[in-house]
Length: 444
Image 1 (tube, one colour):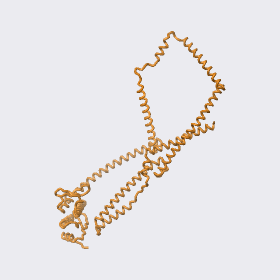
Image 2: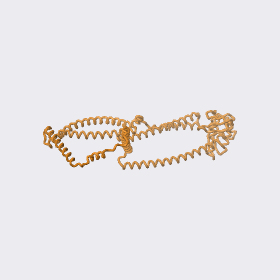
Image 3: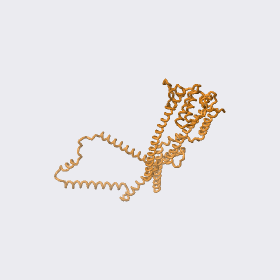
Image 4: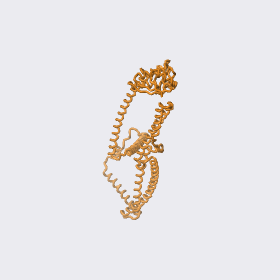
């Protein structure tokens, strides 16, 4: 019997340990469910690597060199410009992809750091997924083991109950000195007879001591009775109140449980083990909020600066497009057709005297080249009012002879305003016009 008691104690201890282990595993399972680790693991299983930036830089550098050489070598400008634009687009796309990958890696590390608070020995999301599977399997195994231990406890407890009953009978025999149940029954009958005699004697004594007022006890009983309620109790309402009270208590229990789980999750999330850790975490969060406030203030100041710069830039561009020595003035003097130039959606739009407007793509190749040349001259005029330097390579090639003369006159006026221009051409007509305008000619 002593061996059975020891076995029972041992099994109870094992059950307590199993319940603790299952509670710990289930708490981890709740945290995994709340943080939604499984969904993120399913999305982020593939390895992501940051692409090397050397290749787009080399391509961009090569495109820039080709573009520069197009001014000195017989390389078509549209091809050089196309390659440069393509390289810029690829570089921007590469930088965007690189930034996106870095963001994904940062997010992945953030999730991994959260997971390492639950499983410190993991180093990747794959290991986390494996750990979660092992944990779920352990919960099932330990639950099955707990059920088996509980059944064993029930079996051992029944044996212990039988042993206790036998012990109780033995103690009763020792106290009463009675060995058989028949003797015990005789003693019980004797006790009942004595109790009956005592009741009769109690009645006689009460009768002898009672007063002459026979209605006294009836009156006392009547006064002590509960008063009849003025209104009959509503049984249905009472049932409803009990149901409502039960529901309220269930809600209170559910909220208490959720508060406990939330508290445990938050403590695990921020690694809070005692009051000192809580105060340290509070101080850290307070400082973080202060830093955010400073960053917000700095961002607002930067936005104001950018707005001021944007306004100044818009005003500067407006001066280049309209007014004296502007793009509109130069382009009108060259074409005699378009009165005004505007910028809409980051593109030039030219306006005729009749009010019709044309996008750059709707203009002829010659008109496009003349528009861009006028923009260069107007921009240099406003950026460098004291004088600047300009190199042109057959900029008049698509212009008719009448406009070529007007372009030469515009270049001459630009030079007279303290600027220098080198014009490269293989066209004899352009050379003759420049020479007639007083330009210094060098033949190679």
